[in-house]
Length: 252
Image (cartoon, rainbow, N blue to C red; front, top):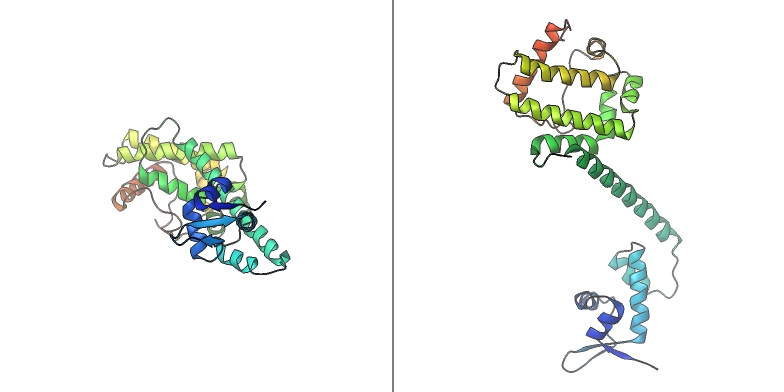
């Protein structure tokens, strides 16, 4: 027995919104079987079948234009199309997994912090997003084995490093403007240095010897959580610490 459905009935039966059905009509993807003199749209059982095709193809990731082309064909040669869709979906899967991982690490960063400094937070999230780019950049200034060692740590260890760096950056921002040689500032700088030594698994003396005399920073690759004025103050604080520790600073 054949049925005719008003657009409202068709929408409820298929769980597709009336707005979407109107859109499909405008695009000539799925037109109602009958339109009354008053402009009311009616759909048939055949339209149910066509809509099911559309829903299936959308689920597989085809665009509406691609779906329109396929619906006009009696035979579908889908091997190439499906292979392409699979590759695209795998890319999206990797992207989603990366986003979930970033969110997980971001939540770990701000655990127990109701308010965060936007500059510090976005800087750290950027470092998470661009880990591969950072790895390639570091290979231009450090031994490749050293770089691989830097990135060969567990997820939990990475999270703890990021959280420590986050908290130290917050501490340091609050101290900006104080005498950079004072004990309170130098204590935070020392924590930074110890963190760097822990990550690199070597002393700051050895690490400084590995670094080239000149390093060109890339503000896009490494956006700073500090203003120019803050960076100048921080550089002075680190310079004082390193000199007091007997570390030779390049350029001196």
